[in-house]
Image (cartoon, rainbow, N blue to C red; front, side):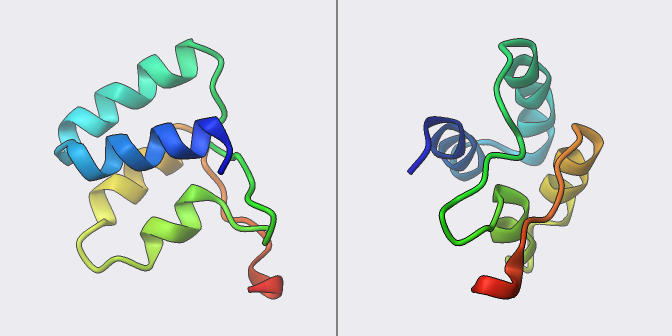
Length: 74
């Protein structure tokens, strides 16, 4: 698992949506990649978009420039 993806995953699991939004600013400031792609072509936004209570997290990611990956290969 790529380091940036792992960091996003741990932050998502351990933070409220408001803290996650603040974290993303620091994450980007540190030149991290919100669009890191897994070998299957998916991004972190793809993962959390599947969770029913993740709308505010997904919105924060989109504001930070996150995009969906290539889900055709999943």
